[in-house]
Length: 582
Image (cartoon, rainbow, N blue to C red; front, top):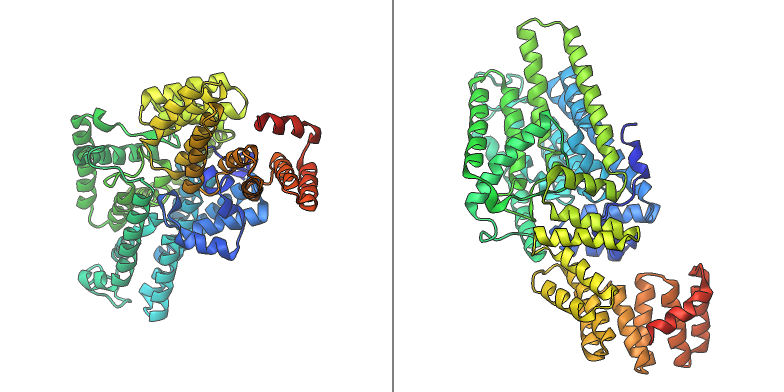
């Protein structure tokens, strides 16, 4: 199977930690507390409870073994492939054209990101519900009933709760009314169906439009709460329009020549030239005019508007994050392009009586090439260093790639090499919080507590990201502790756990301060939080000491046994604990 290699891939060191490996709610599995959290949290600047619950189910089934998480993404993509064929075939009756669209969707390299990246579960999951809603609408359009309409609404609601990307479904359903269902009154309407005027069909979608509007409001609220929406000062309207036009053309280019694919494309910002935006806009207008001239080929119009319309929420008119575009955003929109190509080529070949043999040969060659390129693209996701080194190579001036190369090198213990990349990231983007965070941590690691405090204090002034702030405050606590300022150290640790209750290093710092100060009851509470968040041999060892000092001998022995059970080198825990408590 083409995507089978992903089962050997690790979690990606960008977003996978926030969604799975460093998310205590998700790791708790499908508990009632997890369900309540999933439906009420705005974590990761989104409201997508079904996505959270799918990750929680994975953790319950596979723990933190990445193979299971990856396989679920692959299975969902495979199901989407089958559903797409079923929906197209039921709606159009065209077996081979539908099959070719499906094959392009299955094999196109731009979809590797959505499948090979565990954090993009939301993409493949929302697409599943989108296709179920579209299939339900096809049944409804041919034989309307309230029950069938309710099916559409339920699947749409599920899609919105997986990722608001599918918010454009009502628009796609109007396109579906135009072709292939032909429900719009007129000369080309399907005479076997009850047809209606365009505005009646718009009114028919009003409950779905209301769902979309509610989802849009919730999404804006979630993104604002997560400090993900960029202001018009950072990205003026003119820059957004220019970037949108250029991004549309780049997406078209990647559809037909899928090279230099990467998980992050930096926004050009003010460096984008006006002529680039105007040239891109002219190309888009020219394509639209050519398609409008071919009025008899409704599939071309539907495919183009599907591509253009479903990309609108992700094209950067509302700038979320600092990317110019993203391969994952093409997962749904490219279906429109595939419809255009397959129906357009088939109609052209039929008009010119081109042999089906030649068409078949061309299709097989195309799919083989796509399969080879996709296999190569999957290989870039085999480990974090390979992925982000490739990203830096094909994009340039990519501070996110530099940060993540540094992170991958840190995991390998190559600290000095990692710092070079963090410095490069900071030079590219002085407002980048991750490079500042890691440079501050490096200063602390080298014993330069004052420099670490300077870096981390500056960082706290430039970000509202709770995870980044929690880690920065935790590191600040250790820096102040190294300088002997226990008051500020404690304040910093408390700020860290206020920002993120799961910040176990901050709880550890609080426990160390309490234990050294002789407040053993408080130390027991803090160390208990540490081992609850992350069962850890050293955490249990410190807890055992604090319990012993509190006179709770039996509990101390139980904690010590836990430390012994978890530790690969129990005898080494004593000198480590002594060093921490100095």
